[in-house]
Image 1 (cartoon, rainbow, N blue to C red):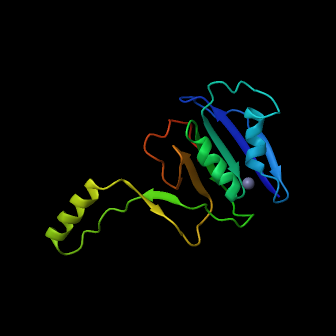
Image 2: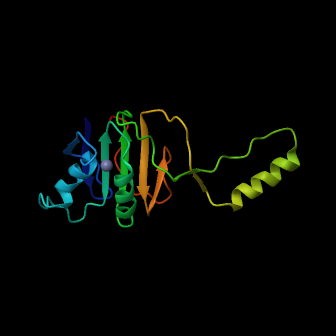
Image 3: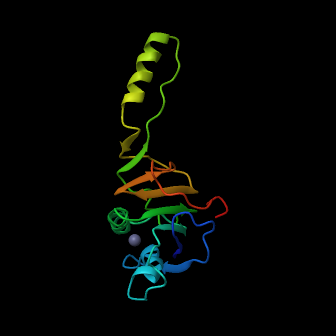
Length: 165
Ligand SMILES: [Zn+2]
């Protein structure tokens, strides 16, 4: 069973407060969307107005459907997923963005200088399609329609620390 706890805050809040819970046993259930629905869905409006940063703490990666859902939602809101385990076996969603690695120093200063210039001129994030085995815990961010693994996207709103989860 996948279990998700969802915390919603306004930007600049100093703690995450109390979470809403969701759980899923089968393919048609989606723990993270169930938890999120406590803020947004038919379960009612719990001071949803103004909440725009959400933290999910759960023991699985989002499934493909939930990945699609949160990419779309991230046009106007920002999501952090603290993935404690990979119980459902989905692994990280794709495509993902990761920060472009800095060039290695090497033995050729001119080549390094050229590589650094290219690095500085390029977009800071690159798309990755297949990460292979990924360790948990992991942190997944959804922001402005894209997903990022273990790297905070540029412009992501300030939020309380997540290391205690
Ligand atoms: Zn799902």
